[in-house]
Image (tube, rainbow, N blue to C red; front, top):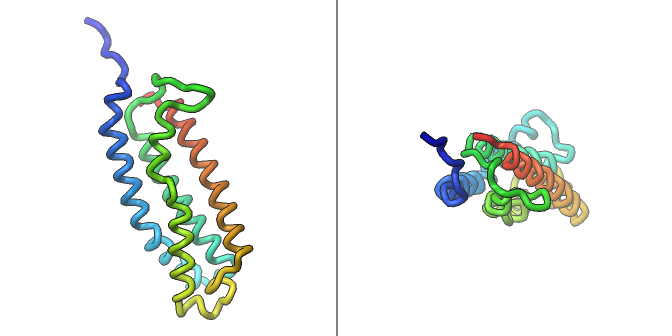
Length: 158
């Protein structure tokens, strides 16, 4: 009797599709999470850097959930790694493409129309500099997530 062979890349297709669907569901809820973060911050009188902190909290949670889902997925350590990048990394990261910028766009719209934020001009109408800072921080968060996802795929034994 021979030992079963490791899962082939083809066998990861349904899992990757399920993962992508979960990411899409998560993306759909990002603005609701943002609104909840804003309301919680306002309730606790934490208005300084409110937009930045709320956006980062939302994306950190979103990425954390994705990493947990990756950790619970099928074994991937047996698949090829080339130049430090796991073969599945591009496919795992693809469903996230554009999510940060879409969130920033929706955040600006929300903030501009929020009565609660109208008392905080720097949050109600974030400046170009503030938006640039948010985008830089999101880029750093994305880089960290992408590296962690790749490392998880390389290490994951199922």
